[in-house]
Image (cartoon, rainbow, N blue to C red):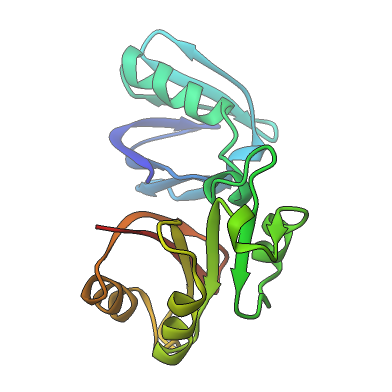
Length: 194
């Protein structure tokens, strides 16, 4: 997840004590000053002593984080987050056996060119489930020993979410090893047999 710090912030002509949060795709400043800015909008990012310094539009910004943290934050800002394809482990020629209907655009894009219908060629399984019946079908169709990503809905309107999925998978002898956001509507958890 992200990083956070209580620090002094100088933003344009304003100065305040804030809580700064460096998330995957945005910088959030809370407190006497409030800002929420996509990381892509931070320009000329550098470290100046104890300060992380950058520009947002025409405004100069400095967060006094301490030299070590300022350097760490600058490095994180400069490093783009891994793609969903990378998070799923589909680098190079790795292929996924897909079970269920892929309706989510972000997941469809991540799987593009990285799927197989042959279970023996799959490095991983990606199963999209809406309920326990879908989960049972996915497990029945999955090759033994192959890690499986269970993709499920998230949010208040969803019924078969992370906790019931995890409970069902652990009851069947699986252990969750990794979690990844897929999109605003879906999340995924990777499982392997114990």
